[in-house]
Length: 137
Length: 144
Image (tube, rainbow over all chains, first blue to last red; front, top):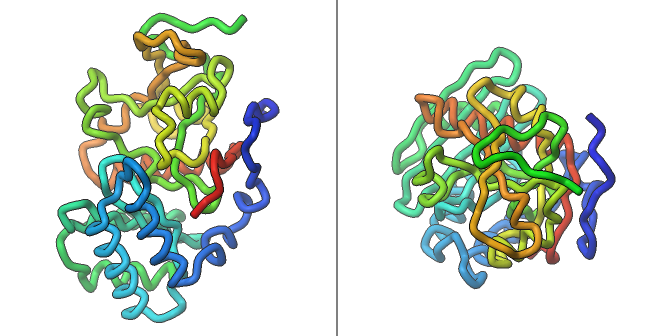
């Protein structure tokens, strides 16, 4: 179904970004990601606490340190439950890592070709998580 | 004049619903479909969306309290939502609110149905992909 003409007014269309994976890979460098995460915690009525933002910065630095610069800056998004998610994907693999306010990591992996699903959770990253993150690096 | 269905009645397949999201890049992330504690407490648990025929993104933004966290609106065709998984549907959710656009309030039902976290995460991935395929995203304010 062809969507009807947009009803959005007084907002800036960003369709040029949406169709491109560049949107997730070039919008932020590592410092930009840190600043963005901190900004999410500073908004009035923020979903994200400052502590969760700092933990997320630490987690992102850790996995990028462990896997090298080949692991791009992910799509970063806060959630209404106070968690923050990182999403990486390529043409075959998809990884979503969510950090909740208690510091628990929820890791989700999907092979978009075979449909294989894998998930894990805990307070630390595991080799199983890093192995799967390498697939999207 | 657009009409709405009965409370908790399914929307027609040709409807297009919008979901307010936080987006730094214009992409809709799977976190946009995480339910709040209040969402989960509903019967059934619903992910709030609005019928785009009855509610503009700006009206939805006002109805949701103009929270800074909502920076954009992502759009989802109802027929597309249903095609993702048989447990998903979009239903009318009448709310006691007389403000403009409130008549368009609906909810995505079924996100909590899968019995594993992995399957629930997969549903959120599919919904985000659908929103990005049917992108009509725009910012209410400049991203940070």
